Image (cartoon, rainbow over all chains, first blue to last red; front, side, top):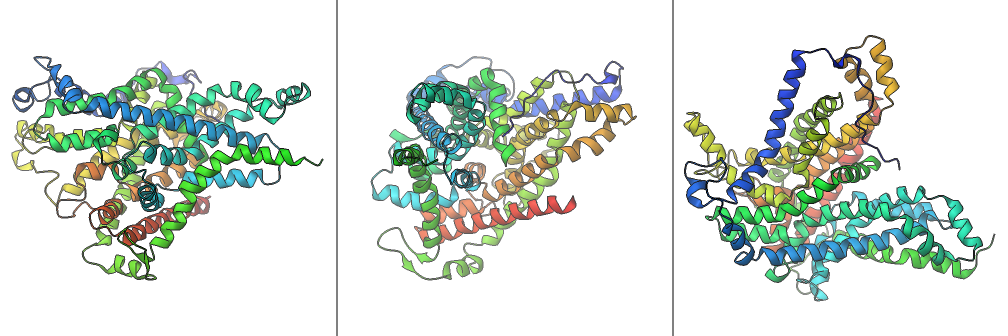
Length: 291
Length: 292
């Protein structure tokens, strides 16, 4: 797998310095689309701080006149957002850990150990990239309910880990290929077995993969809706998407607190994006290049 | 060289966690879905084998009306390929030509992809709100009162109203893929064409676009199969209403399963969707090879 790097300073184009009207038009077009992309988020943050009078009155789109932080308080206390937030975080973190562990181990067996069917095994895991979650939803639901796991964290953690696995193995394969084989051999000569090589050589050098896989899995789990609506009906285990969805159904007329709830669900993603935008974009690209 | 037994055992142990997850949660359930689709089952008791009756009923039943759902997702797929992708390509081409603020635009355009569909859906519900929504407020302030609608409640416009946010949200995704493809081109290609006197337009048309063909193929496949499977946004915006006007296969499936307890029929729709996605992916691959 080749990872595509995004470089800002490639070739400077020859005709950059001449002023042209078409360039201005292009800029206007680009700015317009940027505003269209930003507007819903801007609107969300402004109405999350307004009272109903402002939202429904004259000040539909402007900045709030009185910053009503109590909307956030209500979303957290009355709307149970704190609980949903915690659930989402727990499910996501455990899913990332399981996915990473299983994926790094499997990738090690597939790419580093010598055996007959390692290529076939890799192709087998890659099948998962094309399987839609619809394929599994009914059997998973009936099985989870039979073993009493519906309405637990495991009802989400297990399916999420399984469906993130193929992508994780794909990403790990790319990173593990960058680790020179000489290191394995040196460790072998020093008396390490396969487990020793795995723990002392491979694992420490797979840290960059951890962030890419982690980011990708985080984005998949944090926003997942279908499994979460079907497998979880108890408030205590709802994740953010389901929680926000049921909240909006209950309080249709109170836009302020709902806006606050939407904002609370979005802020973590935005924070991660601000700090890791390049890695996030690259993890999405890595996912598609193989196709 | 002969490897000791313990070596093979170790290979197996390394693969074990991934295999358990993969076989237990993906492969086995697919087989079970296939079987359930041939049964009548209310979730309790044992499934009763009825052959292909579900498939016959699916395509003939007036109350399920799968054709309307398929028509809706095909419309989405068509618009996605004909409007969303060309627009994304245009953005990617422009952004890769060293415009000012390239990275900012890229980051902003990609942002909607990362936000939960529930959040985006809820925001658009409020944008579409007939009394206080931004859209109708805007129309009224422009004196276009006759254009205002109950966007998500009028069965003639509801599907259109659902399509807009879906198409809008994923422009950035396709743009990013194409942009990365263009940036991955060897710069000599462009330089040579420029030296030969090509205009930027000609470079795009004859060098860049043919070069990123494999990425365009991936984009088309993602756009079409993603449309067929679409669920989140429709579920949030209308859940198939008003009067089933915006029903898609996924919402039909979920409603059959959990409102009517028809696990067999729900599985039938799931199997149909998987087959459709697979067939379309093959067709698109084939189309991209043929033209070469």
